[in-house]
Length: 640
Ligand code: SF4
Image (cartoon, rainbow, N blue to C red; front, top):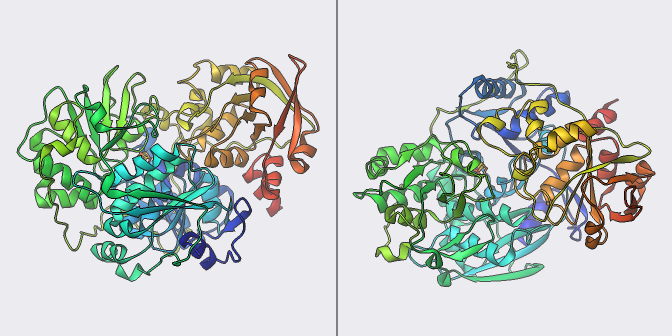
């Protein structure tokens, strides 16, 4: 067996089914973050269960820590009190980014983790099967329900050799993205194998598994070996270690060979993580801002490398260098070692330990500007400036660029710094709040911005409506439900956040959907790529959207659409996209029967008189959920 199959088998999935077959995976740990977690907690509460049933559930606050009004503090207070009531661990704002903290404090090789954040696969760096999902799926896992997913194909990424100086783990995943593209990983697990694995530390592996999310993959996975033990020892958690490796004769659906020694510094160019070029090709181009941080690249080693590179130098005044450490542990280590002083003296601006600029929470680049970032996503507008271009690079390339004031290849800087890592890292008590044994008496504190959960509409005799928007390929969840300072504040207020649906693409969408009382969205390939943001389904549901007809869907977003009762319909012939225009009225007759029983059926275009053959790939469970108008309706019906 490969390692993914072994972990499945240890969780009772035996025999291992064929790819595509639905599996129900028991979940050991869950994580939520504030942008999706307030909703996940409201959903958990709506399930009517006394206490979290997963072995461990952690509620992190990392996405929106700005407190320019009462909204965010209210949400943080709500999350702290609901965690205490239902038995979740709470990580305070400023404590760090969920994925970095999960590695440091809670990750256990061989266990399963479901997180309401698309970069949950970061946990694969420590040998966990860690999967991103919508908040409702995570709420169900907190309630003890297994997570249903189609059995993925397992692809081996076979690593040989060792990274040359100045070439980093980020360049490994950029190389995989260059070859596989942002659609290449749908329905797949990328398992890293081969002798090159031993040359990568856990945090380097986590950079790779983190950005595996950009492939659209179900997850990515490294073995648990001596390096994993060494990492757990630094955290005082060596008891959590077990050796986990694939069998010598493990089978994979495909093998991708990468010789680490042949890699060079790479950059993903605007506005997609797979538009990868060599840094050499970009050298000399003007850069306005360099941002170093995020769950991809803000480990101690990453930031200590940057500190060593800028020590005793001065960042040119026309460039802004921004640093967000991944966790309070990382920040403490930088402070204790004096490296924080090196960064400050060089002119870096030090942010809170949080997602910050990665999710457009401040530090937007100038209009028409160029920002070079160590993050994982560079979708249009995500950095907070619609006409800026964002490039994704390693910390080494970012620091070299910051020093030069323009795109620079770190290999031109001479000898690479040698970073000596301490044997133990400080385990901080501040920032983590454990729940009381009995939380039944805890009062949940809710501010006026926390509104009740809306519910979806059950499928009736027919589903009809106007095509409210026609979109191209690769529409992201940022396009559907943008993030940013003022929008994320309304994450627990669906009526209010719904006003921003598609606001970057078509400002009139939300008002039109409301006026027409819903309808359809039509799109090309890979609709809903990007984050696990379930607001990208929940807010359209609130606006009355009944179906999305696309050439294909991204995995997590498709699941979110089903969870909220929106039909994910696939054009049987992608050319039929040309037969539908914005404003056309569509009707699905015998809707309930079709959803419950058929894999393909026709939509009628009332405006043109044409029929549009569509497919719907649903397992029996999804059919029930969709016809009930979403998972919450379905669960409630089961309880009655
Ligand atoms: Fe936070 Fe950015 Fe990582 Fe998402 S991708 S968890 S916003 S740091």
